[in-house]
Image (cartoon, rainbow, N blue to C red; front, side):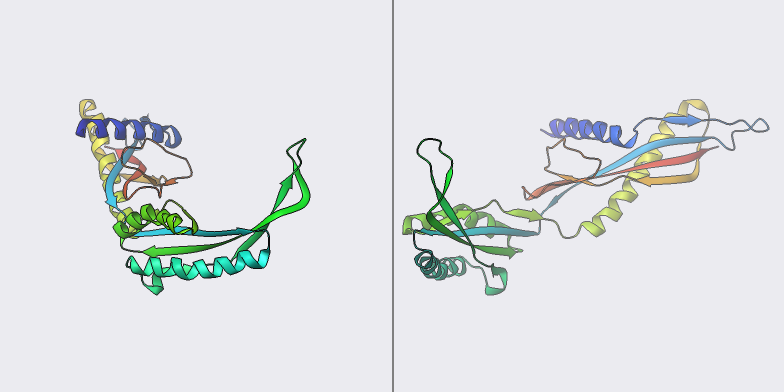
Length: 245
């Protein structure tokens, strides 16, 4: 399994290199018989597996009826039941945001063509309960359980939770440092057989961060931020040009 993830990470870094010009570029300009202006450009990377520490989840409450007011009255009654349900599961008032209602008509279909007519069949009114919490496991568990409200005749739709890691700022600094160190190690390995040594840094370019599922090979030149899983893989890439001495 460990080898599997190593293979995936290697493949992901290969793809990143396409966006980030992953290749060795050795330029030599001989001045007075020295390599004082020579440079070696390498790409370094660093990876960390982190666990999300915050989550957001939307639970949609729906009501439909031919009479718009009746649909709204049903929604209002069921809203209290859903709110009590969320609190009974352990969420506080501060973690529950009840958003504005949204209503729209459903039109009758033409019997011959199946297209919408101008005649209203019924109205649908919806309202979203957005739950945000640092209790990741609770959100995951309740999101899977919530549709049991259907057994009480309450029409709800449980959307997949979104998971976040809130300490990315500190982690990015750490990974960029590790990626630069990785670039230096690669440069040393490449120059080992040439009799030259890695000198000081001439320039550094930072690539976009890729935040993916642990076994993903997905990359993007705009960066990736996957919110579908609790565990995440954070990949940093730097392109460093060193002087050769």
